[in-house]
Image (cartoon, rainbow, N blue to C red; front, top):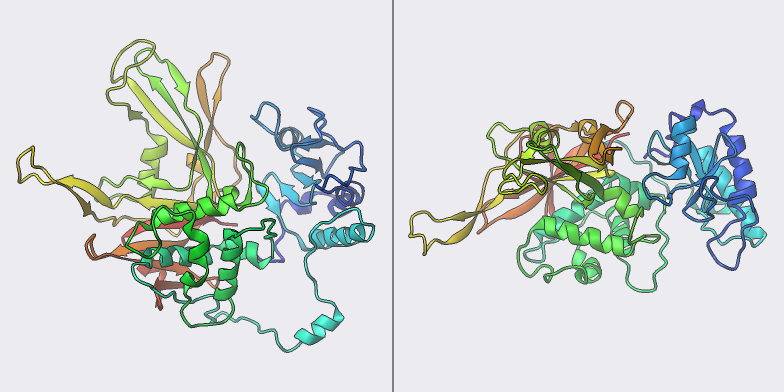
Length: 483
């Protein structure tokens, strides 16, 4: 994200910075998570449930305090206030971050960040907090840096680096390239947001180290086996680099490892960094067409969206429409109410979108050899074509709905309100598979920070165009929310 970027909605709030400074002075700078420090602002509690926990936030436009997590778990009291009174900005009382409900995310703004840093410095002098302080060079440090800072021009290949294949490790290399060019991760690590609290090996720390290696200006191929493999191996079911594996399974294992090492995670209702970046929530319903008995299915987290390609002229939009806008018959299912079979249909919608969307194509199919007898039929995996139309930009708003239980006890879906462009995503990486199962190879297309495309094939990197990318047969597609 551009460091000068500001939320477009913030300009509409009068005296926003002045009110923000008051909240910082009375509530944020006097609060720490350490038990040794007591909350000095006694009126900092949720005005609905009177809880002093649940990630308290203060409204930026009135004197309301609310928690991000309500007792019933359905809607946060802070969000309920924001929607009801159209007060869309809230300040986190634990660390001072500013949340915008229209953007549905914490936002960065240079004047606000500067104020927060000043209050944190003063709080440290008074020894009422141990809050992490971002480094800012003083006059002496700026003098030492003078002449050593290089401005990166649009023709630079900064961040591009090949990866050594240690033998059957192309499936690892392509996932590493995707992570190294995920815009939200680049912003996170470049702003030094990761503060490790673990005494043992941390996968987030190792990922941060890789970012330093990739964006150090070194051009020789990087060898991930020197450090990253050792930290990642404990989260993997198979030995890394010993034989060719599915790169998607490795992607899942890496996300699991990053989530395990992520600070401030909650096993029940997690809102940690990795969950917000890569995990979405989907929820479905089922209804009998005979007796109209219906019920909502439990919500489920997803790391990816599987695309079922069953037509030669398929496109990404068509597949998503079938998946989320059409109902599907539950074969051999008996309705629990009327006992009729094959009358129940299911449908699902996305309840929450992550910052990064991963689409997975099922290009490896289990087939049977029809040239032999029934008893002797052999199972074998076959690779099928995944050629289909996909776009650089994608609007996910039509598939974002929520399910509620109405007064009659039946599930009811409603479209989640969104502003134009709020759920628009942009393609930034594509993993594709060359060859067949006996002699296959993974490679990656990545979009660099200057919007140029490159093919990363282990240690080799080639210039490519957007047209080259959109004409490939993808295995994994990666989109990030576009701001």
